Length: 471
Image 1 (tube, rainbow, N blue to C red):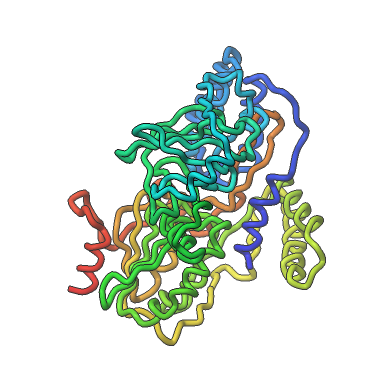
Image 2: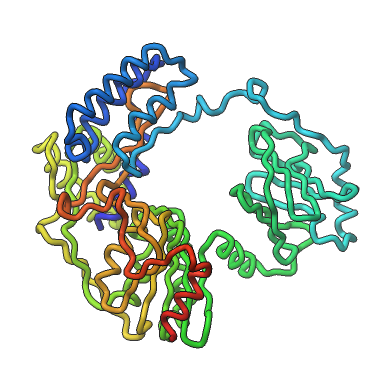
């Protein structure tokens, strides 16, 4: 139940606003310092060397008096970097980022002289897999071969900066691409074509699906391939071993992960060995992996839980969620719990509050009747936050071994949320609670340690895991 509320907190706070104004850099820094010092649950632990912190802060404050707006963002980030917390970040507000295109140093989009009606007739007879009409959700483009390269021209665009027949990207035969971003700035990239139906760019988070001519793949096959491109897939590697890859635990992927597990439940239940790959998974919500627990755990999970820093910001956020959430049966239990939290927080403003009814939290897991005998979890330096929470809890299972490197180290202070702090140019990401295992068992900037460290000589981690499990 708690994890659901944590997710709501993240979403709800983005809608809250405080008294805003245009700040100079000195004002912005002082407002930021005030917000962090009052709302950051790790403030005491991260500033034990008071003299060093105060000198660092004073130095930045003096520097901020002469910093122009263009350099202020970096100065503010320098202050936040002092805390070395992966759940602290600063973001420019959208209205500042969305400067008019003509004010940016960008390339003017090339235009093609294409008659759409004639083009549609042409693609119905073409045998070239790249030529056709493609859709990314935001852009609908037509790809046409021009000499030794392919050019994608805009047919429809949700971005008003792009007009019909503007060239969105160019594809070369060697797999290289020139892609023009939303602001028309150019990026070099590489592309890959899957079964003439999916066009994926390697470094830019952009995928196009073919509309015309109609691809040979079914909708389910396309969705399966999209999942694989995004890093969500299950594969039978050998007769004994199955791999499941989960590249993110973000809230938006929870249903996708659950569908993936449901669709492959026979493989998961009947394999001898399971490899769970969470490399480069930067976290999200603990809800994302709940459905997999019965097949990995051998017992209930034990933890010391968390304690929230009761601040006016947190209270406002929770109250806001109650105000906008319908009085429907599915929300009643959550609303009752949050109401209890608000009462606790109001009675303890400025203090840490344990919302659990006990000091030790036992999470009951209904163990599956059929499950793998051995489980390996692969993790690396880019595995963080709730991916680390997954590892931290799964290490309690008698049949789990973690292979890889120490993880990112961002689990001591969490449930991060965005809010404005008084200057309309920026918004701040801060965690709301700290782990009650502190200070005895810190993970921030240390990471969850693997059971078996994989050094740089191990090139294929999956094959290493298969050999470890089967030999």
